[in-house]
Amino acid sequence: MGIYKAITTDNDHLILDASKAIDKTGSIHSVTIVNKSTTLTTNIKLNVRDTVAGGNPVYTLAQFDIPPNVTLLLQEEMLMYNSKRYQLKLITLTAGGDANLDLTIKRKQRK
Image: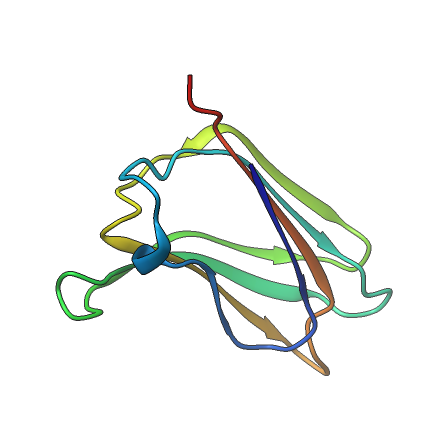
């Protein structure tokens, strides 16, 4: 099962909502983020937010600057978490404009 999102604004983007989790396994096989801009670098933060504790705390799992026309690939089960407790979020900040990203998340297939 995969998730695809086109991100065209700088914002706090909810990627996986804990209230819609099918099971507790938030095992992610890979995350691909493509910066489609030809001129702007986008800073991204990949966070999990604790929904059981009232939305606090928020944990930053990764933070990167993605230059123009660059693809970031994080793979091989790089993230496992309780998806019924935590929301997965992506926060973007682009100096001089808005984000222009494609985000693809592939979840680990259950056996």
